[in-house]
Length: 268
Image (cartoon, rainbow, N blue to C red; front, top):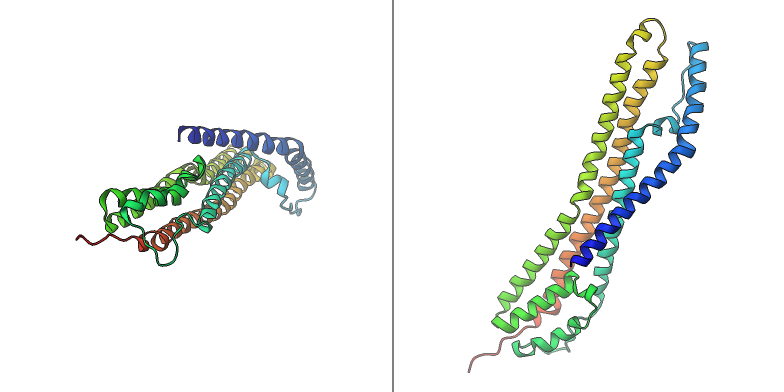
């Protein structure tokens, strides 16, 4: 368990570093140089032609540090979501296996529970940490010790609910990033409006270029942050839907393959 948590934390750190290097390289080599050229051209045309209306360029929209930070956080969150999605898909593959090999018409008695647990115990350590094997093993062990089918149903349900809570908790970092991205966009808005107010004296004298650029920073940062946040929340909800379906399908699997086949012999 500790090794898994360590490897997951290492994965998140490496993903953040890669996203930081990749996005910053694109900004330094592509986005900011093109934005500076386009902005210089638009400033010259605004000064020479009062009727000139500058076109919105994707390079200018993305050029500021707030937008760069939002994109880095977005890619970081997407890498975490991708890892969780892969883990969920791996767990779903176990649903296609017959982990409780039981012939038609046969039942599982309390004294036979240990034998039926062997196929699950034969799985590798990683797979035994998945939800379905844990639920089956917990149910068989409880049935062997208590000889109560109701107790088996309860422990399977509790195991699935506990795993659902764990998966929900592990997405807390992604939820924090989804909250932080619009906040960073708002910081860009405050910075842009503050700079524009500091250049108000230039606008009074007829030079509105500086004010226009500063207001562009304000609105562009909010625009990018909201778009990125919407995309991230959509993908996050798709992952949560996939995880919820996994938990429900595991419960259904245990009901069909395990609980319905349990039998307690009548006392003589």
